[in-house]
Length: 124
Image (cartoon, rainbow, N blue to C red; front, side, top):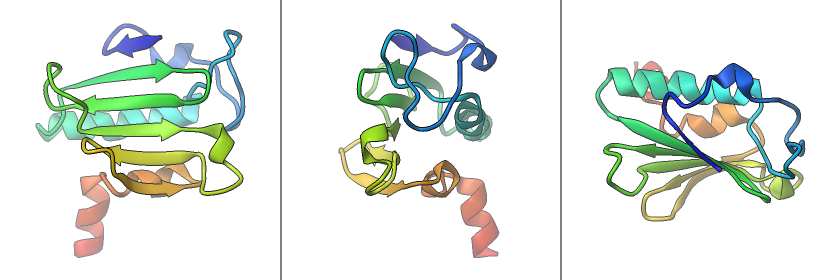
């Protein structure tokens, strides 16, 4: 199932821990995760960096894809894979070329790799 911008409200998603599955046996983002991702998305849209997104809830993972233009391949994919939760971490950010930019157990730490406001705070 893919969801584009404006199709549904974030509050309509059910939440839970990393391994919680929806009634359709799909991995989903919980409300806290979606709020964090959409907060970053909103800031990047305001900065003119991103323009569109898609959310896919699959059997084995949930994917939030970010686009500069809706006709292109995604710039980044933010993935949640519960099978990796005990090993490398359930969350990862993947570039357009398919390289894993960062993987970890905490979504906030993983998103820092693409969060420009976090980078500017570190730089001074």
